[in-house]
Amino acid sequence: MVPDVSTGSDTRGLINYLFGPGRRDEHTDPHIVAAWDMAGAPDPGRDPNATYTQLARRLDHHVDLRTRELGKKPPRHVWHCPVRTAPGDRYLTDAEWAEVARRVVAATGIAPEGDEKACRWIAVRHADDHIHILATTVRADGRRPRTNRDGWRAQKECRKIEAEFGLRRLKSGDLTAPRTPTGAERAKAERQGQDVTAREWLREQAYAVAASVRSIDEYFTVLGSLGIQVKPRISAQTGEVDGYSLAAPGDTIFFGGSKLAPDLSFNRLCERLPTQEVADRPQQVADPADAWRRTESAICAARSVLDTGDDAIAQGHLEAFGDTLHNLARATPGPYQAELHAAARAFNRARRSAIRADHDAATGLRQAAKELAYAPNVPGGLAIALVFAALHLARAAAKWHEQRGHEQQAAAAEQAVRHLQASYQQAAEPVLADLARRAPRPQTVQRFEAAVRQAVPDHADRILTDPAWPALATTLACAESAGHNPRHLLAEVSARRELDTAERPAEVLNWRITAQPNKRAQAARTPSTLNTTRTTQAPQPVATPVNNRPEERGRRR
Image (tube, rainbow, N blue to C red; front, side, top):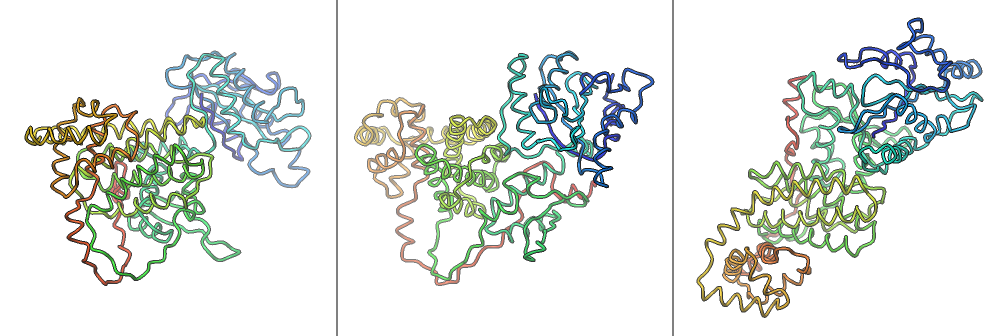
């Protein structure tokens, strides 16, 4: 059961909508199921003599009295709360919907139970699966009701109603969810043939850009390069930017950053996108795969933080991991890229909670994610190793949120896990099969078996009977050719994290070893440096993570 609280200033206009045919003639049999006073609330849906104007005057009675006293109408005095059952739920009776309405207005402070001076309200049903509660927020004593956190209180009451009515139990929120598109926004997207609303499209673009840039100025620049309209807000006191709004190409409707998502507000972005000073210093000739390896290592370290770190540090790493997923999807070519983009979009909800993040503690993962945004493509094995590490961190994130009662975030993390799992399977299965096909000679395999028993004695039997063992043997042979000692390497990578919970330990070790650098290549590069000035690479336009590119949207508008 989903409540959605909003406010406005036009009682008569909202009544017109509730009792009218709807935007697509979807309203059927509109009528009042509950009210502050059923006898005093004329019902245009049941009484042919009742008019919309009569009902609006009754609801606005206390508003009009207060307006005469003040000389002006109280601002945003119309309170509106649709309440909808979940798809698949049974249809409630009018009597049941009346109880729902009374409990919601009581829980939100609109009409506390037993309060004779409470606000006037009605509940209108014009469809099988939902009602609309309309209230005017001036009490009989002239005061405004105490409706702080009314949306959260409505959700909390709906969770109780679901349990009592035998309805589908939805996830409890914590006021960190982004705003859902309005009916008008959905209708506009449908008219224009778009799969998502402008608000949703801008949100995903903003997340993808914020994941790859290094400063708030760069954030605005890249958004503009994508054709998105950026409108900074200048503070009258300081003369500096203190907010911003975005609009899709060719559109006239702007959305503030916080209206897209809480962590896309100007202040939140400034917290995690500080302007970075770039120093002049010699720079080593880098291996193109270094950014990928650093990101894989940082993800593995973040997984340990979720087990041992405090909540603020863990939350900081989850937000940085959200950026990592966006950049991983952008940097990883191939048919499984779509699943990575879907995982990044799903994790956007899991990266936010009521816990304030310690961004400084997650600097390592965040910097690695920025480097990944501009890293060159690498051979598939290392990219798959990174996807494998991300899959396990997403699982750990789901568990972390579940332990803290973050139901919506846990569900979003689980959704990201499913997309990462699909991406990993598409990418890894042919690679593992090819590695197994290229297994080394039996004598070499026997030598590696002995190395496994020496380096990882407690897990040797499980590793050697794992279906991925032939692939691991090939990977060990490649690592040996790259300058690694197989026994030492096995001991090193098995110590990175316990293997007790790994269902396929050979597969886990295979990807950990794949992410190790080539020692011979490192030794060859060590003396080489370039005494050049280090400059910040100009960001390239971020690939759009949803269906239509900005220029296509602009042409269709």
